[in-house]
Image (cartoon, rainbow, N blue to C red; front, top):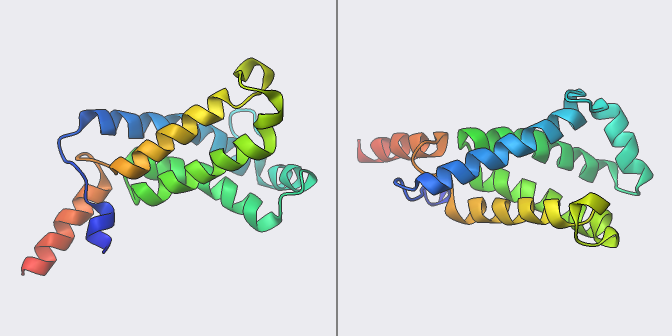
Length: 148
């Protein structure tokens, strides 16, 4: 089952590019929330902000983890489908709980940007990490162990 979760098309450059760009875009958002980098407020303030929106602490924590560690996961192709799923779920909640009342366009804080990120995360989740990834390396290691 683990091999099936990790294994993907090894010759897909488009999947690699999509995966890395998703991670590069998401990383600063996660770093803002977790570490206070890139003009963010850090973990405590972010938890407080999510709490003020009525988001339970466990879900706020999972959102921060998904944005930061999920971004690293998709960049390096480690547990890519799980990481992309986490990012996708955070974007889905952001769409419905934050951005939907503001309409479509990003200029008015609408769903446009988060919808794109949700779609890209969904595509990465379906496609997997591809050739240049830690997932692929794990598949090779697991295959060698089962053959020996």
